[in-house]
Length: 274
Image 1 (cartoon, rainbow, N blue to C red):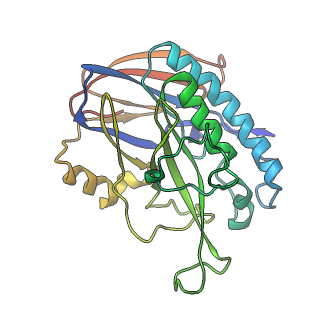
Image 2 (cartoon, one colour):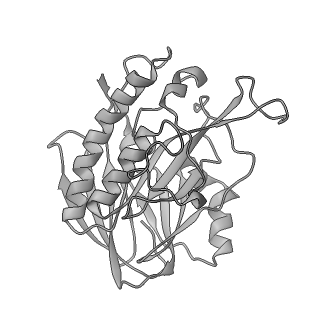
C-alpha cells in the first residue's frame, strides 16, 4: 500500500453552524489524514481487497475519533477521499462504493448492518460515532442503480457519487450529501441531477454541509446561506477553518509525518463555522 502526502489531507468539507443550539460552545475536531492508497487505481479489485484498504484508513481514523472524544470534541470531520484516495477510473472505484440510503430511513448501521445490503464501511463509521458518543462526518462513495427508463442513466446502469455522510452520537445516519461541483479529475463520479441543500440538527446547533470545490460555486454554498439567512464569517486554513472567537488545540497522532493531526476548535454557538 502507498501512503500519500499529497495535500488531500486538508479537511475538504465545509461544515457551518446555521442556528444556535443548547450549548454555549462546542468543540469541533478537524482531522488531517495521510491517506493509505491502493497500489493500482487503474485496475478494479475485489470488494474484499477494497474493504481491506478502507479498513486500514478507518483504523487510523479510529485513533483520531477516540482522541478527539477524550478531549471533549462533539463532532469530528474527516477529509474528502480519506477512505481510498482519489485517482480512479469509473470501473476501478466501483468496489469501494456502498449504497447509502436516505437518512429518513432512521438507520443505525452499527446495530443493523445488513438492512441495506453490503455496508461494512457505514457500519464501522456508525460504530465509531456510537461507541465514542461523537458526531462523525466522513466522505465515502455512493452507488445508485438506474435503467433505460432514466434517459440520463450511465451505460453501466448506475450512478456513482462523491458523498458525505454524517452519523450522530448514537450512530444514526443523519445526513447524506452528494458533491455537486466535481473537480475535473473526478471522472469516477457522476454529477448529481440537482443541487442539494443538506442540513442536520445537533444539540449544539444546526449544520449545513458541502464539499471542497462546491465552495467556488453558487450551488449549493450560496443557496444554503441564503436559505437560512446565515452570514459567513470564516477564513479557511490548511487543514482547519478558523472561526471567530474560537480556541484551537492541536494533537499530533503520528509524530512528524505531515497531514496526520487533529485540530480542535472550541466554537461559540453563534453563526460561525467549523
